[in-house]
Length: 161
Length: 206
Image (cartoon, rainbow over all chains, first blue to last red; front, top):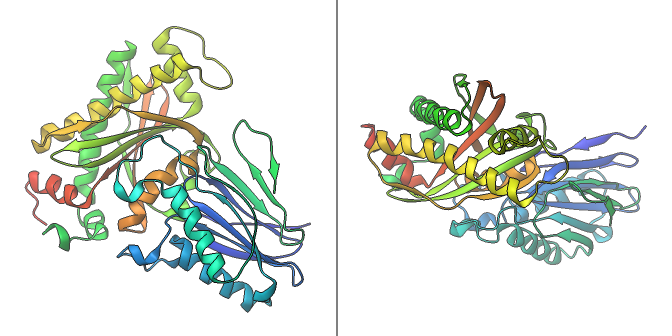
């Protein structure tokens, strides 16, 4: 039986096939999934904010898309992954409310997605698929074995990307 | 000085003050709720909870529990936002009481959504009013915005606001009982300067 590793908000973790990895109820946060299809290791980072360099209080590296991705990559390499083979999928970054008034909060979901893509590009990790934006929450499950990312939302059919 | 205080310091050292604000605010909200529903409503002592982000799903029956989030911006002497979160079935029950109709199933219709916004308006308004009275500060709430989704998806919005200044989220859990059975959470998100203004107005200098 495969286990499913759970990742909380502002957290990250890794797993080995046949296990999967999940995070529940992504809202404006973004979930970044990376795997090595040969070593069959993968991981998931649940980032809340786009850019650690824009925020003074940045000691929690998992909170940010940029440093979260860096740490996820390091962890995957440490468990036998080869960065040259890494591939990514991302989901989340919704706008849960029509207005989000504070300047830091404007389009934060969208900015989380942009920052994740920018970091992946910088590290040379191809983005295979994404399911981002819009106005609803997503629960995601990622399987490093197949690279499948399952997305469940309230009142919507399950989606696999 | 506003720029010298950290959110962590505010939350740990002035926990009791925040708790008291929460207590009185929730008390006012209880009265407003009872008047609105013409029902007997009582309140348990509010619990102030300071949670790490990864643990926010521990409240209210888990990360995927369907909840209603009512979110308002706050302006005036203090700026920030306030959110009231309640379970979807409790919201449904409240709306059916207010409108004198049996609870619906499936997605909320337009009328139910506007009734729920009104409930949110009244509850958060009562809450903010008591803070305004106590601190003698002008607090002006915006029109409410509403979203129905999984708990963690709704809470990601205030969590991100807290995430800008710290690593924890502060929730004020309020349980309404008697004729109404409701487990709700107030999340007050003043800007950092507004925290010190509020505490300063209460005679606490930081």
